[in-house]
Image (cartoon, rainbow, N blue to C red; front, side, top):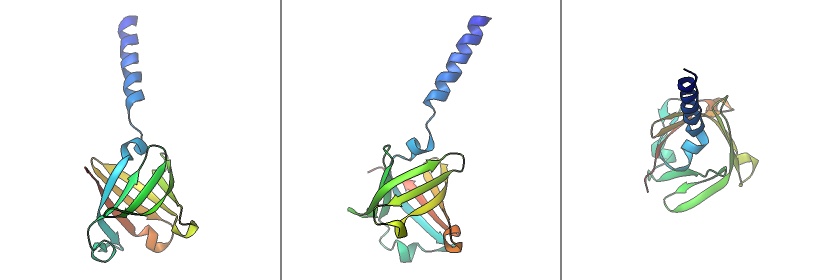
Length: 130
């Protein structure tokens, strides 16, 4: 009986140890599939070429841009308790932002935190396979 318990405990601990945290799941490039501000589609204005992206590294850095061009970079921090992502842009404090995250399969939903406009802004990102 003890051996069965120990085996089950070991399997459970191993399963927990290999469960990816959100930052690990976020690693890689994400394509911006939608932008909503106050429930209105802002994609035609803010992503007219449908080529905007953001990339997260496991080391806690990000890059974002359009097409092949990197337009912004910096570091990020993540609070699992709050599902909160803070982006610290190299462009300065005026370009920093905070987001609440929801990850569903290969889609990442980012809802802004801060001003009324930020609180009513949502980015929909899909994992890029290029």
